[in-house]
Amino acid sequence: EAGSYSSATNLAAASECREAEPGHFATTGSTAATPCSPGTFAGTKGQSECERCAPGTSSDEGSDSCDECEPGTYAKNHGQGECIPCPHPLSTEHGSVTCSICKEGYYLRDSNYSESGIFLAPSEHCKPCPPHAECPHNTTLETLRVPHGYWRASSLSAVLSECRNFGGDGETRCTGSKSGEGSSASGRRIQEDTAYCGPDFKGPECQLCVADKQYLADGDACEACVDIRTAAGRIAALGLGICVACGFVAWAYSMQGWRQKPYIGPPLRLADRTVHNFFEAGLVPKMKILLGFYQICFVLKPTYSARLPDKYTSWTDELAEAVSIDWSGFFLPAQCLPYWSRLVAVAVSPTSLIALLLLFGVGRRLYRGRARDGGVLPVGDTHRAFTLGVGEASIVRNEASVCGESSVLSVLSVSDVLHCPEVDKIVLSQTLVLSWNAKVALGLLDLTPACLVLVFCFVPSVSASIFKSWSCQAYTVSPPSEALEQIEYMRQDASVECGSDEHRSITNLAIFFIVVWPLGSLVLYSSLLAGCAKPLRATTQTALTRATGFLHREYTLTFYWWEALELARKLVLTGAVLLIPEER
Image (cartoon, rainbow, N blue to C red):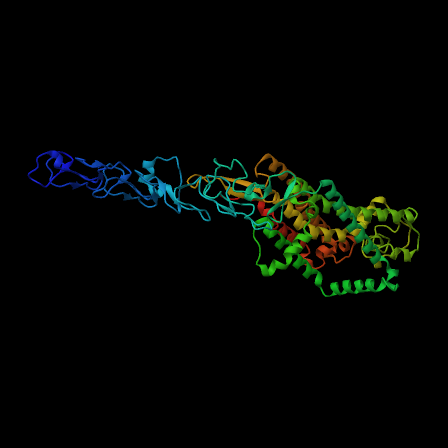
């Protein structure tokens, strides 16, 4: 009967036939069992026919069961004798009827696409694993693994960013995907900004601390911020100490009689010789060129994320930190203070220092004027005229002076103060009266050289800090198949998203400080040089030309205006280009 067989011909009953073994079948009257053909199976004894294997499985000849297709193969139809390899770069799980996932080293671009569509166009849907990412078997864009030390801004982005060290190793903060898992976040942006970050970190490249009033210390740890009142007190004490020290040194240097004293005299005489030799050797223009070069070098890395070769800048890295105008950072780390507050401190502190110097000069002149009986210089007091100072001695005018408009001296105006010639051309013959505004002008001229040096030193770093308000780090959040979409954060404050209301308030403040510093310093240089144009062409020394000698002394007459052009060049290189929108 069916399911059994016998080769004997003298059987008395059907029970004498043998049942077909698993993997075989026998029809009625069979003399031998027949093995199941590939793609079929007989799971028990006595089968009269073999069953076809289900889709996703296959069998060899004489099989008593069907085996699931191995990963990377599939069986779409019933009764397939073997599983078919998936087309490159597709793959499958065990027992698949079609290829709809990507093999190791590739990721599925869109997991919502139909299986049939993926199978028909495998190269359009499976893409090579992004640089630095890990793509095991059956990886999608959302679940691709981010290794230690890397971060991405969205689970739909194929762009991984290497976490910058910030003094640490980067891997402590950026822990990447959990072992054996991809990202659990979804959407165009990370819903939880702690994704790919260690337990204490968050934000872009995990550079922010989760806890309030903490900052990133040494690149891999969060520490508590110093109380802002304590930091402000320390900054004020430092500023006051510097002003007092500089004032004492200037006062001591101005004491001519001290040069003959036994202890203080030798250092003062050495300082005199050093200054004299410095100017005689023509080192001023060389130092200005060298300082201008490194002023630009100092801002290349923080402004443009670029730097010169180490052989030019390695020894200046620590110096750059020391001369940075952001003195608040010594006592209050950047993450402990909003960027707008730091910007105000950076822009206002040197402005206040220069203003204090000018006020000191004006106050000193007004005080000396009162000490001289209201500013009246008696007739014939030639010695006092020569001891009034370079600026004041230049404002005496009479019949023999090139300033002479009259043989009778009247109250001198600011114009007289600025444009009268050198003292050796003056012949005293009348009583000199200085108006209060002339005294103010003289006070300003007294400390104009020092203020111009400060502007020269401060304006590149201050301007760079202002322009950094537009310096943003962009991170891709869109899938590779769609139009580029990025999210940007300030490089100087990663908690501020560029283009947000908070960022716009910062840039509005920065625009005001651009008027004060970059444009203001350029207008100051240009105005002073324009005021010196006529006397310089006439080779006439005036109080104004002497006070502004720092700007034009090293240049030939034809190019006396070059310092203003040099300042404009430095302003462009130290950050003005950041105002140009990026082309994407």
